[in-house]
Structures are given as structure tokens and as C-alpha cells.
Image 1: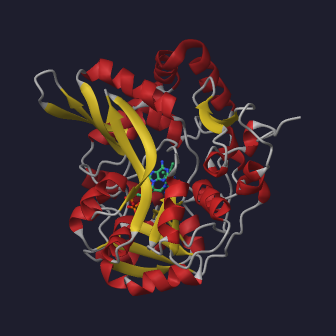
Image 2 (image 1 turned 30 degrees about the horizontal axis):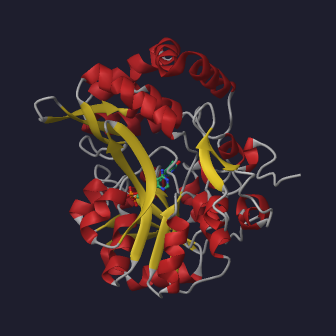
Length: 405
Ligand SMILES: Cc1cc2nc3c(=O)[nH]c(=O)nc-3n(C[C@H](O)[C@H](O)[C@H](O)COP(=O)(O)OP(=O)(O)OC[C@H]3O[C@@H](n4cnc5c(N)ncnc54)[C@H](O)[C@@H]3O)c2cc1C
């Protein structure tokens, strides 16, 4: 009987640690019929050594850490802040590591012939940093980055590895030992849709707007910190244009925000809890207007530009943050304050019956079917969001605080 990599889809996060460790190159990551990627063994190459089973921390429990302290934070560098989804904490830490001749691994979104490819890459040049800034709300392929990180670590270069918590656990499983020159960052994550689904959405957008897709931002800040998207397209004359759409008016982003398109395991994620896998956890400081109302009076904590939350989980993370404090505006907070509006710090996303419907529609009718279903099902919400988004931001913020009183 050959090796069984996972009993069911809930026990595989698709990090690819097994494919990275396999000494025979017998494991490849392949999409299933809906586009979610899973490892597949080539039985002709497999020698049943079991390395793939041992490396899997998703099934063998990763060591987790109780948070030590937490902050609200904003990067002092304005250009970095603009390109970041929230307060730009990631870019500030990454810059510090590059300045120390280190390498940073993070998520990028490339486009090839109009098709998006989300994957992790290593960067050691500050000019390339913007490639791994910004949130990509789709599963990024780990590819061979665990192997690459190990090579740099063994050469005693500093390495900062960032990703979703399951990707960080995958890295620790792969490395098997603690490196003093490794720092890790996980994002607060509520789950990931797959690349095929996203690609199909982009193809539909291409039909609607014309031109060749060359870039996509899930969190464009032109209209301020929030959920606004930007699609960059190149026309036949070579001229580029950008289409700005509030996330809630697009099917892909609405279904992502409502938790209806994630991998099956995301709904039972062992890392959606208080104990964290990485040295540092970063996210959006949602609810800052309640938790630290006084901060918003300071120009540096500007709601329009984005505010991060930072949770420090290990002494190593503390030391790193201490060394580079001057790169941020920092304010002490607490895990509880951050978790109040970030449920995935306490429990995984809940799988609704709607996910089954969305996936069934996608299976049978493709993304066109999903788009039609979305416009029918969400008619009222789309109308409300259209009106809401037509209101100037200043008035929207004032309205929100009145309604919340
Ligand atoms: C799928 C996903 C779900 C998220 N859900 C939440 C949430 O519910 N609540 C919350 O507060 N924050 C969430 N975040 C985090 C948030 O969107 C920002 O990424 C985070 O606040 C960091 O912002 P920043 O300004 O410091 O850095 P940015 O420059 O905006 O972010 C860059 C960092 O995000 C990582 N990253 C981006 N996309 C991916 C990806 N697809 N896979 C792995 N790593 C990625 C990069 O490697 C890098 O470390 C989520 C992020 C992702 C990717």
C-alpha cells in the first residue's frame, strides 16, 4: 500500500512542504476540478521513505506561541504605506532585513498573457520589494521557496519569510530545526480561494472592460484604506488604463469576504486562534475607531492611509521589532482589542451552505454561472453598496460613527 498524503481535503492546506522535501521529486502540486491545489504522488518515483508524512506540520501539529504584546502601527515611509494593504508594517520590517543584507520571501501576483499567477518569491533588492507588498486574496503557490530559504539560511544570510500561517508552519516543518537567522511573519488569515477561480474572474473582467489584464490590486488606496480594487489593463494601442471598483460590487471579492470560496481546510484551520505560529502576526487594525479612538486624532494614525495591527509572539520577534522601532509610529494595544473585530484570531471562518451552492454553480456552469448567481442573489446588497460608495468618504465616516453610537 502506497503513502496516503491526506485522508480528506480538510487535512491538507496545500503548502507543498511534502513536495519540497521529497528526495525523489515524486510529488507535484495539482489543481482539483474546482482549482484547489493538492499534492499528488507519482507512485513510479516514490520509494515510500515517509519524509512527506513527517514534514507535514498541518497533520502533526506545529509549535504555537502565546502572544507577548500587541500594537497599532504605521510605517513612517509614505510611499511604502501607499502600496501596502494596511499600515505597511510588512514593508518596514522587510526593508530593515534587506538593509542587513537579508532576503525576504513574500507573496506576489504576476500576469502572463492576461492570466494572474500568485506565488511566493524571494527578494533581496529594495527595488523589488513592491512586488511582495499588498494583499493577494488568493492562494499563493509556495513552489520551491522552502528549499530556497533553507539554502540562504545555511549560508548564514538573514531570512524573513512571510505568508499565511499554514505556509509558515509548512516552512518550519520543512526546515526541521530552529535557525537564529530566520524570522517569520504570518498574516491574520480567514481563508484562501484558488487561482483558477480568480483567473476565471479576471477573464470575465477582461471581457467587460476590454484590454489585456496586467495587474490587480485587491486593496487599492486611491479611495482610502478599505476594500477597493484596481484592475490594470493594456489596450491594443499599448495604452494602459485602470478600473477602480469597490470590492463589494465584484462577485469574486464579495464571495471572498463572505467566506464562501475558501479551501475546505480553511474552515477548520488550526491556526485561526490566539496562539500563533510565526514570530510576528500582522493584519488590519479593524475597529481602531473603538479601541483607540484617541489615536485617530494624531496625524500619523490616519484612517485614510491605513493602520496595521502587530502581534509579537516570540522573544525573537520582540528583539527584531525593538531594533527597528524607528521605522514605525507605534502605539501599545492588546491581543483582545485587535481580536474584537478580527474573529479569525479566535476561530476559523464558518462554512455556510452558500459555499456548497457557489461551488456547485461553478462546477456546473463555470464563472459565468457564478457571476449570474451573484447578481441575482446579491441584488439588494449590490444596490446598497452602490449608493454607499457614491457618498463621499468623509460623510461615510461621519455616518458610520453616528450609526454606531
Ligand atoms: C488571504 C488573506 C486573508 C487575510 N485576512 C485578513 C483578516 O481577516 N483580517 C486582517 O486583519 N488581515 C487579514 N489579512 C492581512 C491583510 O490583508 C494585510 O496583508 C496585512 O494587514 C499586512 O498588511 P501590511 O500593510 O503590513 O503589508 P502588505 O504589504 O499589505 O502585505 C504584504 C504581506 O502579506 C503577505 N501576503 C499577501 N498576500 C498573501 C497571500 N495570498 N498568501 C500569503 N501571504 C500573502 C505578503 O507575503 C506580505 O507578508 C489577510 C491577508 C491574506 C493574504
